Image 1 (cartoon, rainbow over the protein chains, first blue to last red):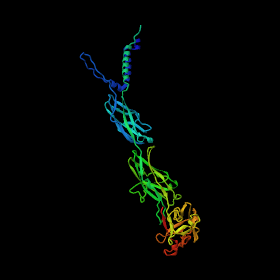
Image 2 (image 1 turned 30 degrees about the vertical axis):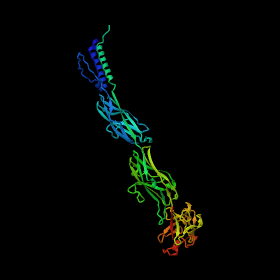
Image 3 (image 1 turned 180 degrees about the vertical axis):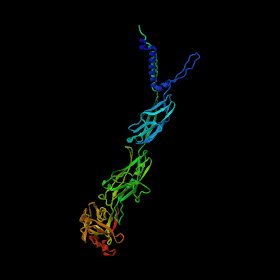
Image 4 (image 1 turned 90 degrees about the vertical axis):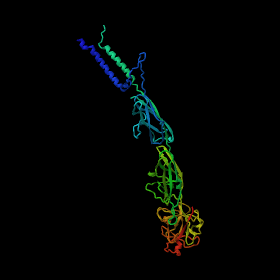
Length: 175
Length: 357
């Protein structure tokens, strides 16, 4: 009777293992795609003359590059904005979601305000000065972004004729 | 004696495996990132403008005398405004300086110039209107210009011939064409000019004697009688120079002499009775007999260039029945003869010789 109350050892083992397996499934589901990327495999089939087997597993990379020269915009005046497209290339091995880290160079003195959006450049399109641009670029693929630079209506008179440099910092993050 | 818990060893083994997998998957939570930058070079525009033609508004107005001299009470000048910068500009006008007493009486109209911009150009309905003291906004069809573009404007100033209290004054305003974009970018071009509310000055010659109406004794003091005297060299500073100031919009004038002021003296018939002398007196305003005795109309009558000077209060004509020096002028009933040989005609007709300014 006592053995019946406690259950058989096999049943306990099965119950414990099932619970842990459930935790494992949940854990792996949570890490999702990243797990899928890292779990990619390569067959180990190399056999040396000595009979030893060996292989080299190289980690992937995440890298971005921009194409083209510095964007040039001229004749900005208070209340007007100008836009230009530029291409970002995912030179790494993993899909990346793009976001704007910062846009440096706009000051009260030059009255410049800049933002980035996905191409094509279009009036009223949602753009960000910092944050995600809702654009994902596959490995080895390119994405086109739109830089919009405007001058505030209250830009000071001293801003006339000024030349200013802006730097857009873009980060791609593995989704 | 310890008891073995059934399945414990197997469970521990599975747990370790789970932990190892978890550790492995935990490492992959560190998201991979790549970063880059893109540069941009931004050059701001400039606001700059130029204007030509504003000095063309320099003018000396003259009220003239109907039938004698044409009035010059308007001035028209083309003004060109160019946007010489690299930003589009919205334009306005400002005025600084000048004499408000006159500037406020000089109307300034501005319109987009058409084929012509001269005295004969008809002012279009799109014209805007202000004064030299407070210029108007530019017309809607000519108040902005793209970079490199130009506005062709037509400016016309105008003053009423009676000048109110501004007669003889000059004003030298600076008119600026101001282009703006945004709250703080402006560019302007300006120029000054002088406008004067001038007069026409005349010697009044008695047709028959060819002598002049003269203030007796060389005086222009109040109470001085007007007499006949040989004409002097033309000059506005003599006691034989007169100007005609229209009373409001009526057909009557006050006749000022020489270097007097706006307060006079002016001609005045001593009374409404025939034979009354005509003398100089201080200006009287208002609807009074004295004021009406000081108002005269100039009526072309008879031969070309012949005029009668008729008093408002009495409707009597200025009369000089003699050609003898120092004979005093009077007012008498106006004659009806158009014959230049008629005695009354000869006594009551005069001509005007304008004194060069």
